Every structure is written in structure tokens, then in C-alpha cells.
Length: 427
Image (tube, rainbow, N blue to C red; front, side, top):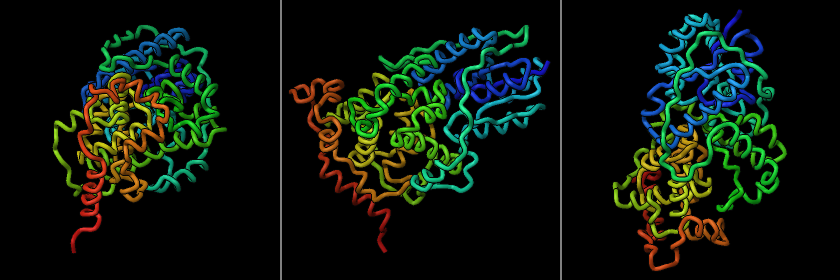
């Protein structure tokens, strides 16, 4: 009887899970395991809400595997100790896992490979394409997009009908956590697939016209993609008729590619000369931004949506990030850390890439003054009927709402001076 371990990380699903599918097809017994390394929970960017989403998604995945005659094992970390021990206990011939790109994930996989006496097989599954197979490094999205469309695609798999587990293995307890968000979306594969099908049925056709509408129009799938409750490859396959949406999936792969090639981005600007930008250390202004009381309704709406739901509309993310870095002149890394605390889809590659993009220190260069968003103009353009602001800032326009904490026109000029000082230093 041949046995394989499926080391689950960010593919918490039974549908279109390449590592699980390969193990079921090639081996007699399959041991799905999640290694609960404390660094995943208490590392650089701890998040109560993300821990809750993870644990509840694991609980549902365990139910799905048990319904197929298998189970999900939980083992304490670190994985370089847990996995060799499990391989020895089960007589496993291989450990299958899906590839990831963060410096933490890459270093972890190297330690596991060095510690194992059996095959460690890397599969696709987190991204649409195999970002490890992209041959040349890209720092601009458009040429990456052209290359990405030509990359081969793997087959989309259904859920395996059965996954036989060896006898005598204790499952292990899945922890509990309470989310910091007061009204987060439901976790797990069932909720993710329900959201995916609703989006494909009701919203995909109008996506190109409505995706910047703050009160709706996007898929809302980013938390499910982050934890792999929904397959990015299956989603691309099902949404292939909408180029505007698949382009957004390509951006996700692009930022993964960028971080894989440039791991130092987690601590510094991709354009290293921009680390010389002068930032302000205004804790009061940062608190007003983080709590949604800047006096700019669209900015405050986005920040309150984040606190309440653990999610924020992508257009709002651009606006609030621009406001923090270019109106308040506060370091993008403080914003990155705040987002990573609250976002259910808090992904190192995506979050870091977007913050660097908005603050004009990262990839895909554009003149910095083109990313100096006017909050009032953006509100009129992307929330024309005021539905988004009314939902999250009902007191806007009343005496209870505070005045703006800064003047955008003045701060825009100051931002231009700061960027110009770095890009065109005195001779």
C-alpha cells in the first residue's frame, strides 16, 4: 500500500486541488495535513480575523474530507520536524504541496526539503499559472500580461470521490479564534464556491463597466482566493469570457512573480532610490486614517468597511493608500501593516505590491503625480449616488462629521515636492 502526505497550506479545498488530486490518483492512502506553525499566527503580521477565517476553513475542509472517507490531520509545527515525523509514522513515500512565493514560504520549503528522507513534490494550485516557471523577471505589468496569457494552463479538476486515510492516526484539534472584524464574510470552501457561482451568474457580464463602482461590481472573492477555498485557475477558466476580470487575476500572479524574484521588497521599496523619501511620523493623523475619521467621506468609508468586514473594495484600497502616503505623507509600510492586521485576504505579495504601486515606489512605474488621487473627485466618479458613503459614513454631511484633517490641494503640492526631491536631487 503506497502512501502520500498532502501538506496543505493555502489550498483549503477539495475542488481543483492539484496536490490532493495527484495523491488520490497515484497512491493508495492519502494523509492530508495542516501543520500549525505558530509563526503563521503570531509572525510579522498577526491577525485575529485571518486566524479565525483559517481555523473555520480548516474545520469545514475536515468535514469534506471525512465525507470522502479521509480526514484532515492537524500537527503542531515547525513543519521541518512535523512532516518527517509523520512520514516515518505513516510510511509515506512522498509529500505533495503547492508552491508559494513569500520569503517565509520559500525558506520554510527549503528547510522541509532538507529534513525529509522522501520526495517533496511541488504542485501548482495557489495561482492561475506556475509563477515559478516564468523565465524572465518582469517589473512592468503589460509585458507580463502578454507573457502570462501565453503560459500553459493545467487541467481543472473536480473533487475526488474518496481519499483513504491510514488507520490509527489521531486527527488533532483545530483551534478556535474570534475575529476582530464585526461582520466578516463566512469562511470556507462552501461559502467561497457559492460566492463564485453568484458572481459568475449575476455580475461577471457587467464587470468591465462596474468593477470600479464602490457600492458593488467586484467579485468579493479575495479572502477565498487567499486561503485557497476557491481555485484561482478554476475561476479563470470559468470567467475566461471576461478579459477585464481575468486581467485582475493576472495582476495577482504578477505581484506573486515580483515578490518571488525580489524577496527584499518585503522590507524596502522595489525602486530602492525611493527609500530616500521623507516621511512624517504623525500618530494622530495615522489614527484618524485608521479609524475612518479623516473628514473625507470616501476615505473614511473604505477604512470603516475594512474594520467591520475584514475586506475593502479595491478602488477604495487605492484611494485610502494614496491618502495615507501622499496627503498625510506617512510611510507606506505603516499602511501595509495595518491592512495586514485587518484584511482577511492579507497576502504578503498582493498587499506589498499594491502599497508600493500606489505610493509610487514599486513596480509598473508611472509618473507619481498620476497616483495622487483627489478624494472628492474619486467619490463623485466612483460613488456617484452616494450609496457607499451612506452605508459606511451615515453622519457625512451633518454637524457630527469632522472637517477634513488636511487640505488635499496643499498636501498634493507638498507630495510633489517630496517626490521631486528624490527623483531630481540637487546637482
